[in-house]
Image 1: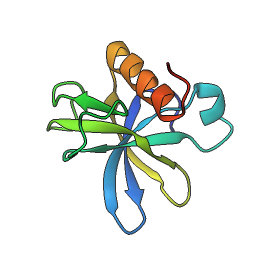
Image 2 (image 1 turned 180 degrees about the vertical axis):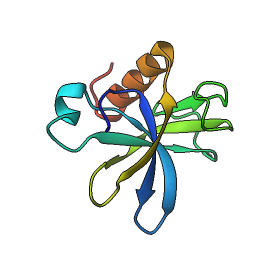
Image 3 (image 1 turned 135 degrees about the vertical axis):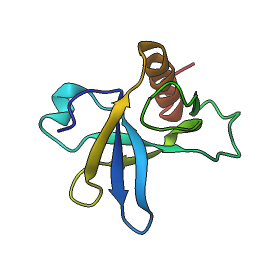
Image 4 (image 1 turned 90 degrees about the vertical axis):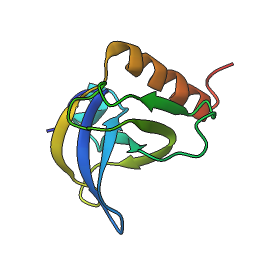
Length: 110
């Protein structure tokens, strides 16, 4: 069961298949509604965007390769995109970076 922001899970995405994602929404949201998730990719040509957070392979043990959290590519976990298996969680430092990228995405940052 998804509970906290910063948790990384494998999700079954429609028309795409199994992909990793990191939970962005707070515990209070996740326990009552569908969690908001940012997609993780291993290929991102737009790494310089402030909405992209680099994710080294050793950051989350179960991922196995370097990747990027895309704070501009969000989806809701639930029936259409179910969480399949937990992978791990982001460090506090990476979670702060992700929150900054989300703030930039939604125009909440300077």
